[in-house]
Image (cartoon, rainbow over all chains, first blue to last red; front, side, top):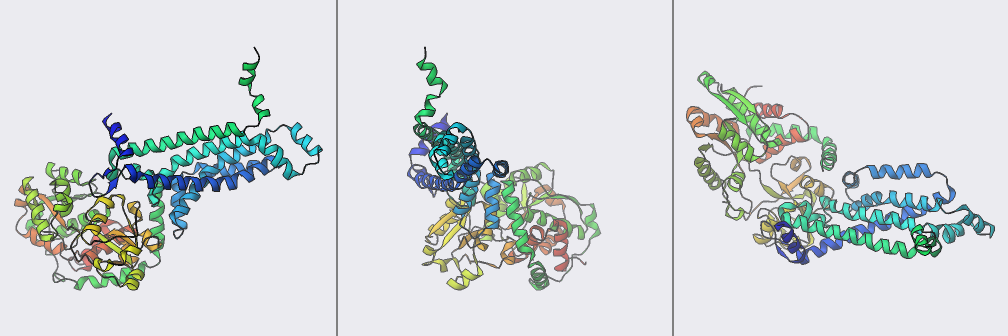
Length: 238
Length: 323
């Protein structure tokens, strides 16, 4: 219980490090938090930029999906620590920030890709047929019919990836990118309170991302799709 | 974590392979003439055969090499020696020697003062002799005796690449003054609060770096060779220093406490080993300089030889035993 109190103090109050000489906690956490968000944001943008178009096109054409999804899932099977070590070993001259971003993006791609693919596949053929009958091109069908209808699932994927990346970004300090993982890894500097304190911040970030993106997910769900929601229907019919 | 280390070490090994033959040959021919004790061979004394000793060591490369060097050197002098060279950390080793599981093991004076005798980092003596005397006194309180220390010290040091040293004209740590604001320093996470690391550089030398980046200890040479770090904190006996042509800056204000190695033995055992023991010990270790220790560590860590082979090489190359 005492550790917990110390951990809360660590979050809010700046203090001496374990052996003295360095300031930790409180305001000192802000640069760590900022780097954490920066590396998470960069990795997520990169992952979305790659996985979303690929997922939409695969879902639209229905071809090559097995290969693409398998390949990206293999990426997920390799531990992120190993990926970071791999990038650092083979691109030693690239900045550590870029290497960590690449490794985290690879972690983030599979859920987004799979969800985008499944999201598009489950759009009813009636809708796409009707769109095609109205003379829409493939690009128009993807943008105006399939993407909106797949959005809830796509945001589900982004949500899973974001939470994963927020949690995994804690290993970045191993290669010198100072995220909130620093207090967790450098126990001799931050002490147990710092370790628990930083963990609480990371957990809070993950929960915030989950809640925030869930709200976005609800907001982007088309009204027509919402009406099909069985729970809603149960409420409306006695 | 292990994967990270394995990959990084693998990368080291690959990088180092290219230039092995050249530097191994070069260094070893220089060794025999490096100190005055060189040339004389360890004499076998049959009277020593009845003295049975078990030499221990902690569980990392340098310690294992040291343990083997002592064991083989003492064996050459006729002592009946066995070894137990993988004892874990210093607390385990201390317990083993006190409990009689082993008779002696090499310990660093700085480590002994910090982790056995409750010294604070800022109270550590800067003079190797004083540090040894203090450690010796501490060991006496535990019923142990500490034999005179090795010439080499295994402490932190400030390293830069040859290029950086040439470009900025660096020789001493104080040469960094006025230039450090443009340099990035890499060190272990603990470095931030250690007096023999970042904290000392700030307080003793008054240096401010552009940025301090804590990384995993294993990457201390990698960050230099890859150019990510301008300055990195390394250990004086690291094998990569010679092989990667790094330059250690002279600690001209004496901020790094001495970590010379001293053989620690139970007092009652030490009373029985005979008068020649200390003389033999001195012969064995008086050529263990920083450079020689780097080379020996390199042969184990980078050339993948085992500690026993490397210890034998040291003893033959220095002429202490005949090949």
